[in-house]
Length: 427
Ligand code: HEC
Ligand code: HEC
Ligand code: HEC
Ligand code: HEC
Image (tube, rainbow, N blue to C red; front, top):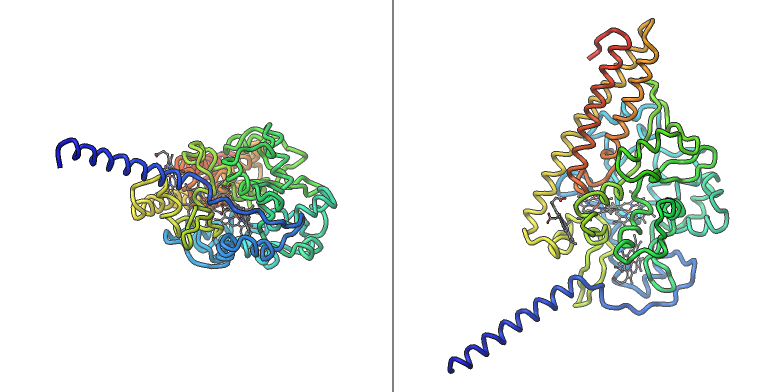
């Protein structure tokens, strides 16, 4: 072999390597191999019917039935009461249904069953609760408009046979991603976002955001509303609630402090979208529905669960640090978040007690007590934005710690205001 031949072979090798790399990268970035779209009739909600045409996606969707704890000790897919790790929750939610039953979330296939069985519902519960559990919400809204939300929950549950399923996220005619929750569509429209014109990248998060977001019920109608008019950050949502939107004052009154309380609900989308992954254009589906392979066929995993079970598929397309390092990072972030969350929660319990003790003092300053109640309301809402969020801080680590730090400080301010109002020192 002469020098020229050697150089040519070397050049060829470099080209092959480069070409191979490009093929692999494109393979990672591209959608799964084009699927043949089946003729599924509009209104078909049964995932087993869809599954006949899309067996790989259906088989992975069925895995959402599996239950297992998370390797980091947070989250997990088993119905463990959250108060086991945070007994302070029983006092913080005193006087409202979340003190009776508040379990970890588990897979999508269980959503209707868990709604039927939770001790949080009763004869007075309203149809609005089905909104984020079933594809039937599309039909309910078509037939009744928002009136479905004010009908008895039992009536709506009888009609809603299926949990979160294919037609929740896909248009049966085209298989394109879509959203069906009217509350999400309205909230986005109010922010100037037309969800029917959203990019594919955005839709890969919007299909989740239609349910994994904070909301409240409009008084009188039980219409579901997202508090997003001023923005998605904690201070913006709190400012929104402070203006008594649609006549909404409170979710309940705390029996110890008499404060007008807000219950935050799973703001996964809000926390994620303002964090590093969210602002860098990573979508919920990137981590929770990664591309995977079976018998050489590439498809989107529909086993929506903790990405710690699929670190290789979920994270390594973007991160090259190795799965052990990634899992350790997640655990560190979660441990740090939990420590502050637990601390803030316990201090907010003390704030409720301090206000109760102060209010029992004859001649306590009423304006001072009102100030203390406002402070504990805000402290607990900030704490709850993280307590109700499902990733234990991972979706946005720095904002999680910032919000919890503020919650902790607000709890101390509430205690101080209560002490001052009554001239005592409870804590
Ligand atoms: C929570 C939302 C959600 C549900 C429920 C859902 N999908 Fe998907 N599906 C997605 C997302 C996200 C993608 C990726 C689409 C993209 O990137 O364009 C996808 C992609 C697909 C694709 C395209 C091929 C592929 O693998 O990427 C098919 C086919 C599919 N889903 C079938 C189903 C079937 C069948 C069901 C019910 C058993 C179902 N989906 C339930 C969100 C969902
Ligand atoms: C129709 C509403 C709805 C949609 C759409 C939806 N979810 Fe869920 N999700 C739920 C409910 C309700 C639960 C809790 C079910 C239970 O505990 O019974 C849940 C549970 C989960 C869990 C916990 C699973 C486990 O194993 O512990 C994850 C993770 C999750 N969802 C992520 C997502 C992602 C990512 C998307 C979008 C691709 C999405 N969800 C779309 C309503 C929804
Ligand atoms: C960068 C990757 C990533 C993105 C993007 C992401 N998540 Fe997560 N998510 C995680 C990790 C990691 C956890 C922690 C899992 C654990 O503790 O087992 C988690 C936890 C969760 C859980 C709780 C799971 C459980 O086991 O109980 C839910 C629900 C969830 N995410 C929903 C979402 C939604 C909705 C979005 C988009 C708005 C989203 N996630 C975006 C990585 C991600
Ligand atoms: C689509 C690309 C993408 C995927 C998938 C992805 N990440 Fe990231 N990740 C990023 C980017 C971009 C950043 C921010 C810039 C940086 O730090 O390089 C980031 C940052 C991080 C950080 C630093 C802390 C933070 O929030 O900024 C951790 C930890 C992390 N990712 C873990 C994970 C884990 C665990 C998974 C899988 C469950 C994952 N990532 C999936 C792109 C991705």
